[in-house]
Length: 166
Picture 1 (tube, rainbow, N blue to C red):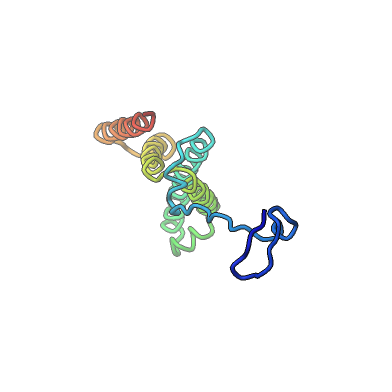
Picture 2 (picture 1 turned 30 degrees about the vertical axis):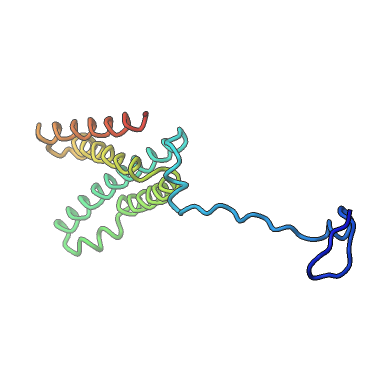
């Protein structure tokens, strides 16, 4: 059996070596929107651990910053000078900034893997951690309204997670 090409006047047998060398068009890869990969993923255990690390380290960084700023303000009040200068030389402020920067990197990695509608409510857990640490570590006063609101935050987070299970 012979085939005639419209651009070539010679005929070649089907399956010849010349036909095998002709490149065949490959189908174009299916294009996805940038957010489609994130939207399609569910909250896996490694993603959950990364998300919790981001939230806990953010809360820890905030507590360190508060502790450092409290000391810087007290030192500036007693010895004079600038609060900003005292804060810049405070080890707690420096450590708090480093921990907060690490939490920002973990948050960015989380957002690459988890839908924002699932990840962002976990920041509410950070609020609860900060209220708890503020009362226990920093000895800040908290009212029953604060604890009641914190309980509502936990209920809201549980509601979001229950919706994720479906």
